[in-house]
Image (cartoon, rainbow, N blue to C red; front, top):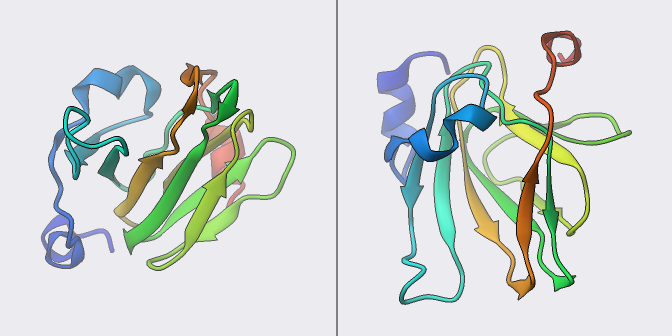
Length: 143
C-alpha cells in the first residue's frame, strides 16, 4: 500500500490537511481530518493518516479520571506499541483501547500508508504528554 493514489481510494474518511500543528511529534508527514467539531460535540474524532514509515513520538494521555485514547484502524497497515511490550500489527478493523497513563506510539509500517480514527476518551483534567521519538533502531526491528 505504498501508492498514495491507490491508498486514497480505500481511505474512506479522507486524507485531510497536513498535520502541521503536531508535526514536531511525528517522524515525517501525517495528515489530520477532523470528523467531529469539538465546539458542537463532546467527543473528538479525527482520521489520522501516516505516510509509509511515519510514526508519532512516544506519548502519554494523562487524566485524573477517565481519559485515554481509542484507535480504529481504517486503511493500510501500521504498528502500535506500549512501553515494555511487543508491537502490535494494525490493519483495517483492528481497535486499540489505550488507557490513560500508558506510554505508547503508533504509525505506519515501512511499506504502507496507514489511517486510523483517533478518539480522545473524555475524562477529568486530560492532557497529552509528548515524549521522545521512536528511534530508527527500535522501529527497524519491527517486521
